[in-house]
Length: 181
Image (cartoon, rainbow, N blue to C red; front, side, top):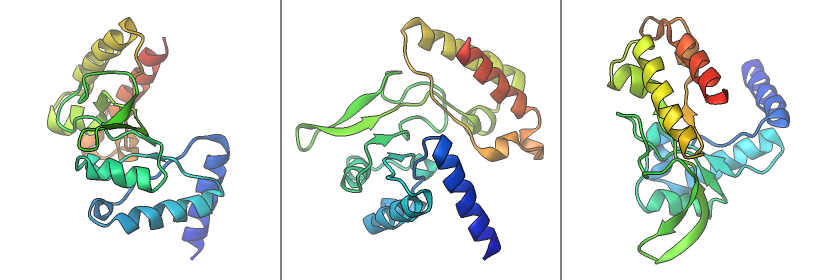
């Protein structure tokens, strides 16, 4: 369809300028072949190898999810964080290699932990945009003090004018401003 072709063109054009990655479907956690199909589809559209990932709904089933990503050729994953609170699920704000405890081996899968997600602030913690700006300023300051990496997960609907997201575009802008300063 015309919409499909336009979407493919958009993805291809964005991939020329930016790093892109796969956002595996919910079902891919149960069916490994879906990751391969989805990754190959994106790779074909972008005309480049896909090595980055963030799980849909932060679905992590240890160690299976990470083993599946490794088997699919993913080298970097951005799923390690909390859905219902801010902070670091792995206790660090620096990337690290996944260590498979069952196999007693370090893998080549780099984990990039994130500290803040938009829906965490609004839907789980029920913060106002002003409170969210204050909370994120605090965590950004802490990360900067240890020379860590601040990663945030942000969804496109957050920047919309949907009722539950009114005022959240400003939160995103403030996060970017505070992270860069």
